[in-house]
Length: 118
Image (cartoon, rainbow, N blue to C red; front, side):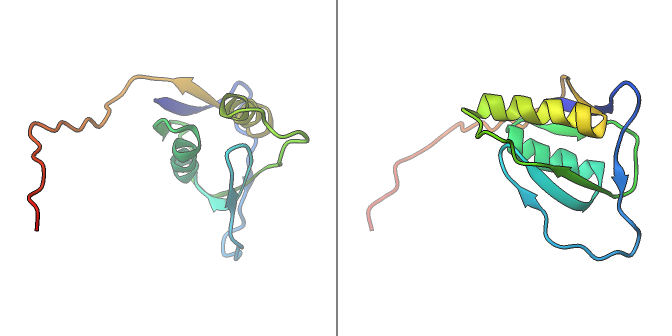
């Protein structure tokens, strides 16, 4: 799992004005646009992008606008796309993902049977 922390120098986030309406955001595997997003919600989105649990540990509250522009060149693979996101989080937004240990959901199937014919 990962935890989101403020990078050295603190977060560089653009606050979302209270009461301002917003359009839909956009989420891709190597760029995103979020309007009126909390850091808890960002962690949820990053969990889907990175396919690993991400938890907010910044201590920041409120809503923000976060725009990670599409790359000039298409990413060659998911690993490159993920590296790009991690770098941008720190450089553009002052946020850093740190590897951490935590609880993981585990499903155990202790018995299975072939279904009967109708």
